[in-house]
Length: 473
Image 1 (spheres, rainbow, N blue to C red):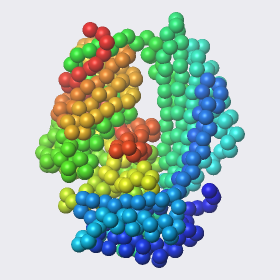
Image 2 (cartoon, helix red, strand yellow; image 1 turned 180 degrees about the vertical axis):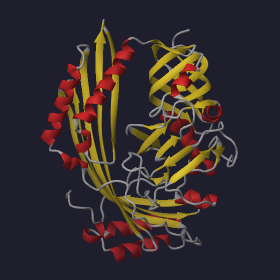
Image 3 (cartoon, one colour; image 1 turned 135 degrees about the vertical axis):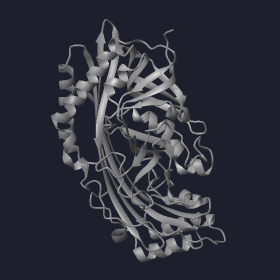
Image 4 (cartoon, rainbow, N blue to C red; image 1 turned 180 degrees about the horizontal axis):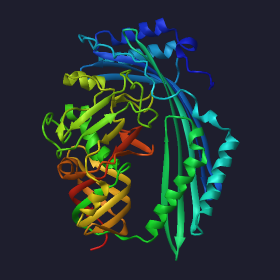
């Protein structure tokens, strides 16, 4: 696969022929598009002083969609050619049937670009990346004699997208991505604990390869590991919980964000369905999904249907004011698309997905919030989590958490899980810090088997009455 810019209508397809084929497939439909993509990515993993894996992946292809009502016909191919396009159009056309639809207005074009188009993989040679990983390993081991293992990953990629619509509108987007992750394992008196940290975004690798970036990551990973060396079993029971700023917003993303995606609400399978305009959260709670933040991991200049990204308010001062929409669900619900139509690749159909989802700051001092906690948990870091969209119930595991008694942060606890439901948790928010922070650029989101990069964020929060699962009585 060539490193030359992806120009499918210059080298692989005749644009006029492709447009005629697309129009034939979508005649009598409500919507549709031809989505073409080339994606290249690499990842190098060092583990315990050795290169564990080094991979390079490249793919290209197209997907053709024809939408009629609630039905969408979709066909895709790894072969970008006229013959493959004709076959795909015949398949997608089956969803249109006898037609009778009215083609939806096209998305508005935009010249806004939220990130550069340089290939992050070209910022360093393969040998240079290997040398950096070895340097990371050596530095991590030098930080503390208790460090027994260091792992590090360098990952980068470039996604190039072309979208052709039936009215002739053509849109393109070039999306870089880079990331470095590190983790350390420490051992003391026969006990081992791990700490990890990472970060990245839609920019070149060169920014991440500077010692000023990755050395703090290693120091933070070591701090987390050492904290967990002294951690005691987490308590169990219903208690108040303070969530730290930044990455703990993943709880917001899962427990609330998915429930505000348009398809779940149109089908009335979300716990928030039918509540538009109602108070669903405590006063002061304002939640946004914002794909327009430059260089952020979850940002997109245009979504995968061609709609420009937007800063969408979902909850305003506790009131539900918006859902995240792709074009199909927006049309069926009689509202405007919000720039949230996303897909994992050309082989996947678009659906409403989050970009960067976060809660705005409040007025409370973060230290004062913790000091107000009489008996509870202060959760700073999170690992995996699960949520049931139909009822909003969630379970999240904490990677760094502390017991708080009478406003004093005490011992670290391990094995803590937070259990609750999004609708109740929103109403039980009792304090909102003035310290909004976004995550460092590590988020991925899964839905219906598709994975896309996302961002999360929040200020320090006090939530009352969450169930904490632990092993201590």
